[in-house]
Image (cartoon, rainbow, N blue to C red; front, side):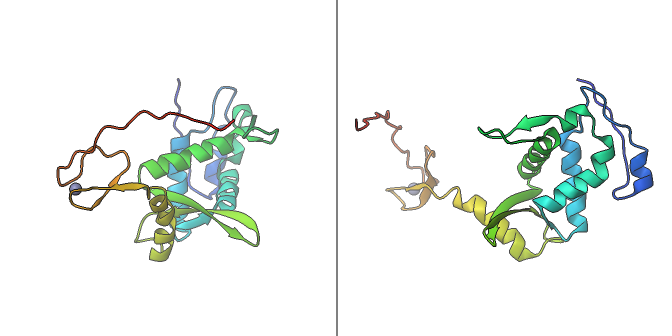
Length: 179
Ligand SMILES: [Zn+2]
């Protein structure tokens, strides 16, 4: 796979106009969007909504979009489509989360789901936002088992406790389903 690198100044129209447009079989990369996201978040005090991010991507990358960035892709099982670059943006957020740079979390506001992307940098982002965003990841991991020897909690898939107690191997699961 071929890789081309170009640089531009964020929000600088003159700089952005120097970027070339993607041809067929070229797309903006997820790592590029991830780096852009981190810079944007720094500018915005560490917190942005998904909508603000999409607007910023369109403003800064829109002139580079080629047929593959804009190709409609289906999301989920229904017939709703969205341009491919939005999938790439989702992937960029996953990359950022894996590197411990940012976290996404949604909340209901006036019965509408609003998704926030939060930069995990305490020098930029207010502490309460970082705590709120990290809270989601904590709750994902609350299935634990108790060690019979020292009473501490161990992740469900843990084979050994810190105290040295070895849990018995998992038994096979038999699915006895009602008719
Ligand atoms: Zn133990």
